[in-house]
Length: 432
Image (cartoon, rainbow, N blue to C red; front, top):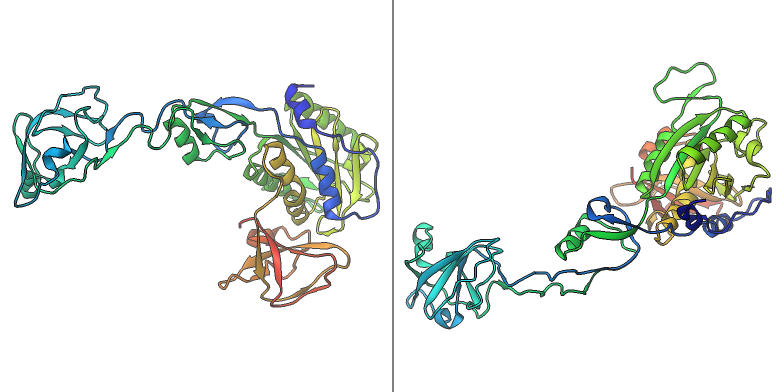
C-alpha cells in the first residue's frame, strides 16, 4: 500500500450489514471516520490552482521589493516642491530618467529631478514623486520635459507622495497564506509576488466512477426496449470535479458480480483511486450487483432515513480505496453525493467536511413529505428569493430531467409531514 493510500485510509468501515434505517448523521459519521487528509505534496505554483494548502506560505522576498514609483512623473526632493503652485511653480532641472526594470540610481541635487516611470526604483536621493500631470508642460500640451532641460511643478506635493515603500505590504518571513486555504488565482498571485515558487498542498483525491446495470448504454447511443442512457457517470464526473477531486476512470459493468469484482481489481491496479463511487445495485433487488459482489468484503450496506437516497453503502476495498455505493436513480445519486461524498472529499483535502454551501429560504408553495425520513427536495428560487419545487414530480428519484432546473436541495426534517407556504427551510446550494 502506498504512503498516499496509508494516509488516506483512516479507520476502516465496519464489516457488518445493517438493515434498519439509520439517521443521516450516523451514516455520515461512519463515512468521515473512514477518511483522513491525503499526504501533502510540493508543487509549483502553476500546478496548485484549486488545491488546499497543507503548510503556511511565508514571504521569501519583500512586497514591494524596493521603494518604487506609483506614478509616471518625476522623482524629486520634497523640500524643492512642497510649496509649488500655479502662481509659484517650482522650476527644476531634469538630470536623468529611470524606467521600470532599471537598476540605475542617479544622484539628485538641490532643485533637480529625475524622470521616472511607474514601478521604477525611486532614486536614493529622492523622497517624493510628482505626477507628470502636475507639471506645466504636460498640462499645456501633454509633453514630458527632456533630460537636461527644465520642468516646472505647478501643484504642491505632499512629502513622500506616490512612493511605494519596500516591505509595506509584506516583509521577508511574513505569513502570506495560512494552511487550509484553497489556492485561488489571487492567492497564487500573492505567493508569486512574495518570491514563492512552490507550495505544499493536499493532492486532489483520485476518484473512479463505476455505473452498474445491464440496462445502461452510453449517453447518445441507441436504446432498445428496457435500456436507458447512463446519465449518472456524466453527473458524477461533474460534481466530483466541482469538489476539487480528479476523475481518473469512468466505467460500466452489468449485473454480474464477478464482472464488478474484476473491474474493481483492475481499477485498483491501473488507476489507483483513493475513492470508488458505484451507482446502482445497493438495495434489495434480485440483481443488485454491488451488494451481491461486496457483501462480506468490508462494505456496509444499510438503509438511511432519507428520501431520495435510502439505500447506501460504504467501505474499504482491498486496494485501500474508499468505496461509496450509491442508489442508481439520478436524483438519489445527486443527493447522496452532496450529503455523503462531497464532505468526504473535502476531508481528504484538509477542508472542513461541511458539504455544499447552505442558506435558508422561504417556501413559496408547500408539499407533502415522506414519513420518518429526511427529505431533500430539488428546488429553484423565484424572483423574490423564495423556493419552489424544481418539477411537479418533486423529489422523485428518477426525475433526471428535473435536475436541470435544481438550484438547491431543500432539507426537510424527518419529523415534518408537510411543508407549508411561508415556512423557512435550510437549503443546500448546488447551482443549476
